[in-house]
Length: 246
Image (cartoon, rainbow, N blue to C red):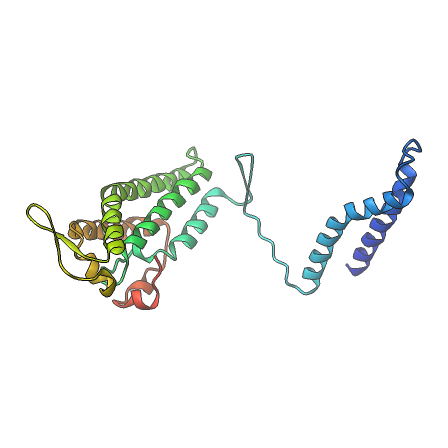
């Protein structure tokens, strides 16, 4: 291998010096030296890349894994689409605890909504590689569609109202509650409260918490039957303190 590398380097250098031989004499303004330098500069990038690959191979630090490529909107897949989809989805969901277990005392609902929206976008993008004419891939496509529908319904119902309330509460650093005709100031500073305590002042707290738990049930009972995630690691009541993935 080392001999081959040396041989390639020699060929590159010789090629650079051979360039003037093939240039017509009608170009007097280009000297041989200029041509050689131009050729060397042109060959510098592939030579550098070759050197890096060789160094990585020698030190055994080279690992290349190409699973997919997108060229002009066309997906080129180097593995079966269903296998690629399952592996990608599993790796993504392994860091999304709140999809399987919400903790109203420790989890920031505003950040959890961000996580749910990123999950919505993830499946919307990933399902595009699936071929619905094939049975196995069709089932994964249908599951993705169901995930998107559930998350979309939840976000549509809860996201805007909660974010407006949360943003106003944090910016003004005060907690308001609904009165009969107007809002009432509790006299409490939002920044001085634990997130779990603060969120309970949200006027639709019970609704959004139930929505989170419904999503948890859906992912544990349906999604996890196909995209198998180790949810046992999240069973501790204090998981939010030690492994607060959203």
